[in-house]
Length: 153
Image 1 (tube, helix red, strand yellow):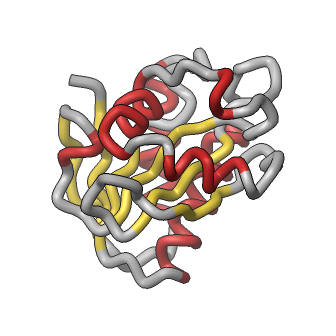
Image 2 (tube, rainbow, N blue to C red):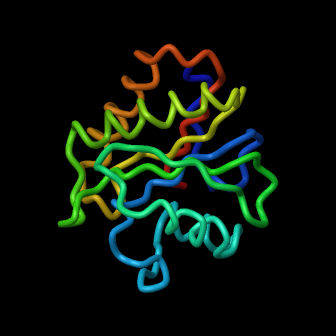
């Protein structure tokens, strides 16, 4: 359930878990200089979640993987593969990323979740269109917890 749309930093939200808008996990994490949501998470959490994520190997587009939260106070970080190998997002990759993140949050019994606007940063997708797609995917999912949609400040 979409509880609120807030402007701010995803790592500062009062939730049990956060979603990281990531890539297909093909390029080694240590070669990437994360920006946007992933950059904020890496600066606050440290490299532990990204090292753990690397052990999962390549992620199919639109999938979600749970890791520990490193130095952050959350129960976990859900990383979604919202962009393809050409660093672009699509309507399908955004919708599947959100749906799979919510399904994973439900399986892990996270009652609260903060989600970014998947695909609008490094994915190059239109910000407003991505925001609409993410909002719709949250509303359409059966996840019963509260979702805070975090937009850029």
